[in-house]
Length: 156
Image 1 (spheres, rainbow, N blue to C red):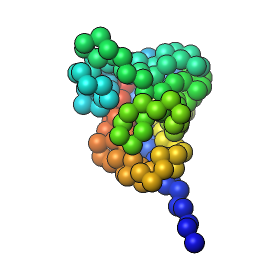
Image 2: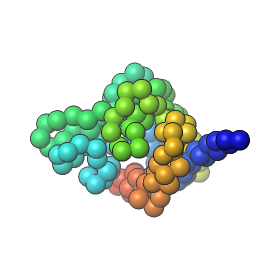
Image 3: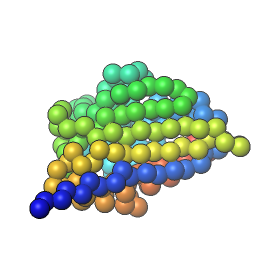
């Protein structure tokens, strides 16, 4: 009997000292300001990631040599409350147009700022490497680090 256990979604939450509209803008439009240069998929050094500001837009990185590497696409662009991204990277961090996991980011007003909740889900679509990928994106160097860097950019 083969019981396939699906990995749980990775969920992270952080409070930022900015109203929801600004928090959304810094996360989505300002991603190139806070995303670390170490988190890249291209062979060249990372210049910046880009999220095109519309449903159906591209999510990609631009490298210093001018090359672009696809990461995914925008499934829902709903400022100031919600951003839903298709993450199309396989377990080797290579673009796979047929693989979709989802990264949903919700921005909710709280006293003095915004609660930002991130969920990376459907990791079971990674197949037998799903749990290993989950451990990486849930690690201290994964979404937790990214949200911390984002929070610091939101405080500027």
